[in-house]
Amino acid sequence: MAEQYEIRSINDLLQFDDEQFARLLPDLVVWRIYARCAVQEGAQSIGFTWVDDGAVGECTQVKLQIKETGEWVTVDVAQKEASHG
Image (cartoon, rainbow, N blue to C red):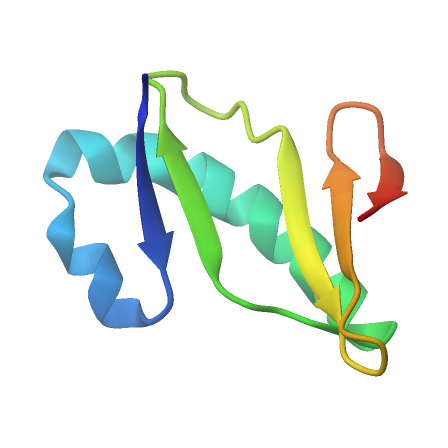
């Protein structure tokens, strides 16, 4: 099973070695694109969970929380469809 890392602050990025950080960056870029759009639409960004599966640039989901309702929304990046739950 791939290791998972919770990133809640910029300091959390310091835990990665150079190889891990290089794998993380493409996923972080994808997360940022979706998170910025979602926050503009009323979601609340709650950090980033990175799965170190060894694959580079294969971010498959972005999870965000709606501010008003507390509802979590999962965006399937590959299919660009949202599922609620």
